[in-house]
Every structure is written in C-alpha cells, then in structure tokens.
Image 1: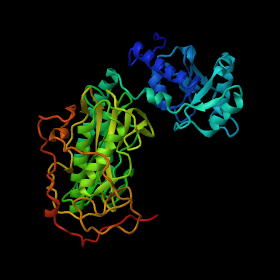
Image 2: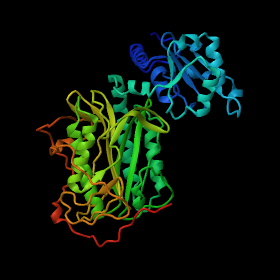
Image 3: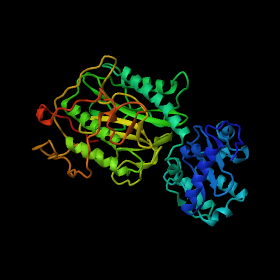
Image 4: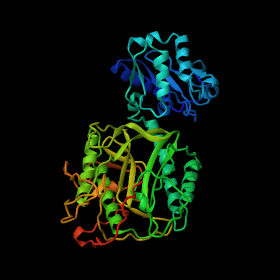
Length: 498
C-alpha cells in the first residue's frame, strides 16, 4: 500500500496495510467477499477519513481484492482528501438531492455507482458483510441496499473491524498516552470548578475548555461523549449530564470524562465531595477502590476477561456489595455517541483472553438508592501486567483547592444491580431490601489481597502479584466493619419513579 492522497498519513503505510490485511483475513474466515463499513471509527481506522459527516449516510466499500472506496455526501467528498490518504478516484460523493428525501436514500445512488464500477459480480462469490449494529447504519439504508443489489447476500459482519482494532500498535498506544495528558488536565479542571455555589453547567464548561485546549504542545479533540455529572441524590444514575443547579455543601458529584487526541480516547471517572460524605458513601467508595485494585492486580496476558469481573465481585462481596453490570470495555478510537469499541466487555460471560496492548476503560461504578460512586482507570495490558494511562487520586476526592476530610461511619442500603447484599460477609443480620427480588451473590473466584502498588498513578507497570512497590497515600483506610458506626435509623432517599 502506498499513499496516493494529499493528506499526511497519521500512521505508516505499513500499518494501514496491516489493518486492511487483518480485516481481509477475518472477512475470509467469515465467508465474506466484500465488506461495507459505516461506523465512523472504523472508517477512520482504515482510511484516516475524519469529519463530522457521519450524520448523513456514508460508507467505505472494502472488496476482498483491490482498492477501498469511500462514499460520502458530495460536499464532504470534495474535502475528504484533507484527511484521508485514499486516491481521489476512490473518494466518491453522492448528489445533494439524495439527502433527507422520504423516498430516496443515498445508498440507492451508491449501489448504482458500485455497479458502474463492475464491483457487484465479484462480491457475489461470497456474502457481503454489513455493520448491522453500527450507530449510523439505518434500517432505511439497509433496505436500499437489499432492493438495489438483489445479487448480494447481505449478512452481519459482527463488528469485524472493531475486533481488528482490539490490539493496539505502539503508535496507537503513544496517541492514547497523549490523550491521557488531556484527561488528567480535564479532571483537574473539574476539581477546581467544583465548589459550593457553582453551577453544574459551569463545571461542564471548565471540563470542555480543558478538553479542547489540551497542552501547549498539542490540542485536544472533541470527545465522543460529553462530560457526565450525576450529582447528589441523582448520583444513583450513571449517564446524566448537567443542568444549571448549584452545588450544595456535603454533596457528591460524579465526573466521567475523557481526553481525546487524534480520535483516540482515554476516559476517567472520579467522585468529588464538597464537604463530608455520608457513612454509607464512604464505605461504598472504600469497597469499590479495593475491588478496582484487585482487578489491576489480576491483569496480565492470557487471563480470561471473565476473571477480572469475578475478582471485582468477589472483593465487593467481602464488603457487602455485588455488581450486576459489566466493569469495563475496550477503548481506542471514538466518535459520537460512544468511545467504547463495542467488542470486549469485562463481565463474567466474556471468555476473551487478555493480550498485550489491549486497552480498556475499567469502569467501577456503583449506583445505589439516592447515592452513588464512580472510579475508573483506562488501562493497557502489558507483557506482564498493567499500565494505567492517567494519574489522579482515587477515593472521595475533595472538591476545589482546599478539600475536606471524609467521614468514617457507615450504614448500608442496596438496590438492583449495584447493591448491598443481605447476609454477606461482615453484614450479619442485615435486613434485606423489600422493593426488589434479590439474587444472592456467590463468591466464584478466589481472591488474593492486592499490594497497595496497584493503586499507583500514571503509566505505572504493575506485574501480577508484585511484591515491591510504593504505596499510594490516596488509598482510603478501611476500618473493620464491627468498628463502624451504625446510622441505620437514617431516613435514606430512594429512587424516584417516573
């Protein structure tokens, strides 16, 4: 493969060639003679094309042999040479009259263009793969292809290119490390902006400013997801953004954000306090931090993904909690509305084996009734352990520049999904919640107490069962359960019903 377009290649010609070759190997394994790529992250990964044009239909046609062809809106195709290295003959724009028409679709025109290039018959030798679960591939687009290309057998490719993206090259890892710098800066901007009396929208503005300004050496990209800021009682729900309400004293604000550079994302979540946390929130944060540390200690090539989930839940169970949802997912290139790769999920059902240079957002969110806690790390699997991309204190982080001390007393409540578990170790006699049927947690994997070194910061390599490393002063001290105060008489808020 040689560069034929005008845009400078972000990666070497050899790397782009290897990506295409890897995609074609998977195509052959799946019996595909051609592939239609509509996910903007996959289009970028294969061709370098990068623009906010994905809100109208676009695709890359990938034959088993020959050149890839980018089809996009005519006004976008005219400038595509500025980002993609494809030859101008392989950048094709469909006419404006096909945009947002009730009885026409751009893929009607694209199908005719493929036929005019004599590309239909070669693709009949096998099936043609479609990204059936891509965010920007519509049922109407699918119907257009079915009607215009009856010779083809159209099938789901099952995130074929996404899976090629799972293992990163050294060049991609370097871009993610640069994105991580922006991530750290954005989270510090959030911390400085969070204070009693500040509006949630002001915090979001500070984060967005930092995300885009980046550093003096390089600026940041727009991120695939806006800052998410569940606050106070609404911290029991993960994907809330912001409003114009002001922050109150002794209130928790969850911040989930990402830094992005050259479309590569490094997310992070932290929980900030404007004062003193409740006892139950303090205990929840300590349990979650400990479980995160246990997972980091477990990461190494060859480990099944399900083991990470099992270790996390085994550790949570020792504190009286369990988590039903996944604890992370594969990350890399991202476009709205998601920075996840939609392939590997860190959950008990996923048997994928970890491999060096896989990258994940290890997302340890616990959303209870009327309160919640999030902490996360973006990680790389190394040849012997794990690298964390970012460096920011964990635990209930004091908001602003001054900060406050966290409370140590505790009472437990639970809810479906992330919840306290009745009769778990250390919780004898706890009354089970009555508003939802409960499935008791069961320890499914032996747990080894992790070294404190697993809580260290940016780009620290942690080998499995590492014996010597510096401890992290930010790690919260967990008092014995029997020594914790009992404030079970507190009137705790519960989830509102719509």
